[in-house]
Length: 357
Image (cartoon, rainbow, N blue to C red):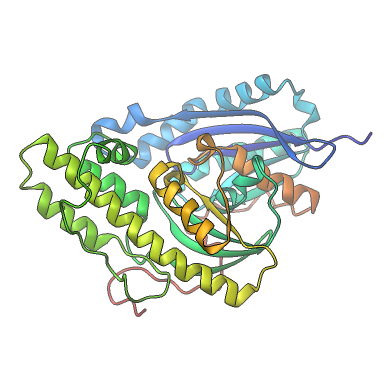
C-alpha cells in the first residue's frame, strides 16, 4: 500500500493563527488529522476591530506552539510530512508574512516542497473536507473581507461572475453590530438579535438591487443603519433593526444568486448544478436556510463546509496544498506575500466611487 501524502497547512492572514495536518484515505477522500485555530478576539476587542500590528505580534508569539500542537494532535512524526502549505494572500501583509515565513523555513528545514496558497482558494475548496465535490461548480464566497460569485472550472481555474463594489457582506454585519453597540466581533450576534425583532419594522435600501448583474453593494445599507441607529432608544428597536438588516441582506442575496445561477448555466452548461457557499458568513443559519430553499427551487445541489470550517482555518489551506501536491504544483521559497490576490486574474477591479456597472 502506497504512503498517503501528509500536508501541513498554516494560516495567518488576519486574526487567527492556525495549523492543520491532513491526509487522505484509500478512496482519495481527505482526512483531517488535526486542526488548531487560535483566535485573537480578546486582543482586538477593546479597539472594536483588528489592529494589524497587534495581530502580527500575536501570530509571532504563538505560531510555533500552534504548529507543534497540530503535529502532536495528529500523531504524525514530523519527518513524515510531505509538504508545507501556507497562506500567501490576500490579507494583512504584516500577518501574512508571519505564517508565510514560518512555512517556508519549516519546509526548507525538512527539505520538503513548499506550497503558497491563496486564502480564497482555501475557502473555495473547504467543502471538499466533508463532501464529494467535483468540478465545475458555482461558488458564493461570503466573508468579512470578500463577497464574490465565482465559476469554478477546476483547481486554479476561476471566473468571477460578480463581486461587491464596496463593503464585503461580513464587514456590513460587523459594522452594523458596532452601530448597535455590540462589542467586536459582533457580526454573528446580529443573527441572535434578529430572532427577537420584527424584520418588517424598517424599510432599508438595497443598493444596485435592480442593476449590475450579480454584483453586490452594502455601503448604502450601512449608511442607512447609521442614521437609524442614532435614534434608537430601546432594546426592542435594536432587535427590530437587526432583524430588518438581516432580512434585507437575505433578499439581496436571493435575487443576486438567482442571477448568478443563470449566468453560471449560460457560461458553463453544467451536467450537474452544484452551488458551494463558503466563508465566515456561510455559518449564518438564516442565510443558509434561504439559499438551501432557493437551490431546491432552482434544482441546484447546495454544498456548505461544516460550520466550524466556515471561518478562517488551516485545514482549508492544507486541502489546497494536498491538491497542488498531487499535481506537483510547488512554489519557490521567494514567493511573496500578496495582500491583494484575486482568484480570477483577468477580472477587472470593481471597487470605489465611479465604478461603472
